Image (cartoon, rainbow, N blue to C red; front, side, top):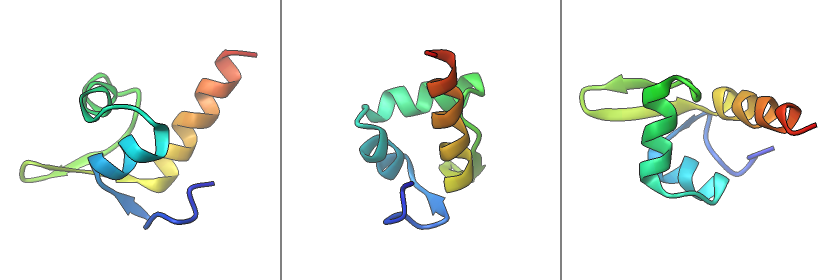
Length: 62
């Protein structure tokens, strides 16, 4: 899953991977639904955190 992305992803990459807008990615990060960290003003999201988020979301719907 998400093999084409690096282990640390940007907001733009996460938005592209999930087919959502950048603002929605920021919301997920701010609420803690998606785990990430900031270096200065730049958010970085571990690919493992994105995979965990997707798996959690898919289990909620079943």
